[in-house]
Image 1 (cartoon, rainbow, N blue to C red):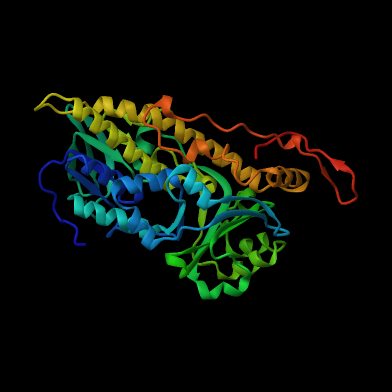
Image 2 (image 1 turned 120 degrees about the horizontal axis):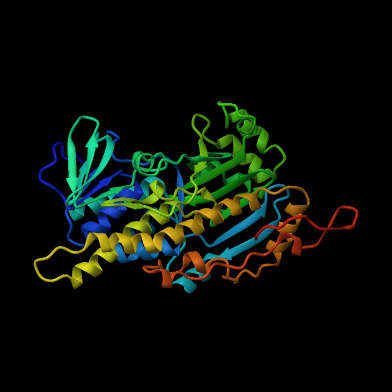
Length: 438
């Protein structure tokens, strides 16, 4: 792709940020006949990282967009999601992903992040979205008939709507909200390697496997039709806890997984060691819309990774906004413009609460994965007691994306850790103080 060097005319919508959230929202709105321009600060469009998990709530939208077949060709539809104890490798619980697809109507997939990004980039090109690179936005302002952005080179861009999809460290979030990121003190290492490099490591090529252990976890699954294998190693950094600036380094990676099972230990030497991702999120906020400037994706609701919903929530955001625009456009009188303010009110009314739930659940889920001592044993007992085909913990997130608050399904009912009684090695019953959720 050769991005257009100089913008021509005024678009209906400006999207700041050319990641998955920005491109998917640009495509969603372009499908409704809007003129959309994307401003990306990097010299070229692209994504850094490895694998992504996309649940049925996302593949449902990809199918509506006509992009699901392309995603299937580039990704993998695994058979199971299996959770194991990282220390002894024993299975704790699983989801039968083929049955999951029957329940929700759409598959659970894994795909390389750059492949999903490329799908939306090509879709935007076909839809006529204007794609500009080397565009660094430093300011936002509402106007009488929309909003505008100020670029680092002094140029001003304006539109009826500005979408700030500029990520975790969003300029718009800093200017409009002013809060800061929250460090979990955890760090992630990633790697995507040829499948041949891991075949002797005891891996499950057709499953998504998550090993959860004290202050660490390890994720494995195949990518790109099974030709590649994705691994993610996450652990709590002692240096971060001590307040040191240089935290999450490879020596901490090796130390964090010393006591884990063979399959995990064999995977650790394959991790990329020249880069790592410190795990940050932000506290949920109630206001995403500031006049005609709307936060979207990680700019609005950056989660920790435990729910595997970060990119999905961004895709859902754009779909919901476009659906409300289309509804209002269909009801508008001939020759009049739809009410953007009403569309933004509807967008915020439903997305804020759903994403708050995902962010909050992700934090609790991370705590649950990383338990030690008696709480770890109780967690394991609760997970082993779960029926494989019990979907009470997934219906709230994998079902159809809500367009209105009354369509948002109820949350699951947490199970207290203290409800499980386990035996210590000497046979004495143990209970945990406090409680958690399974």
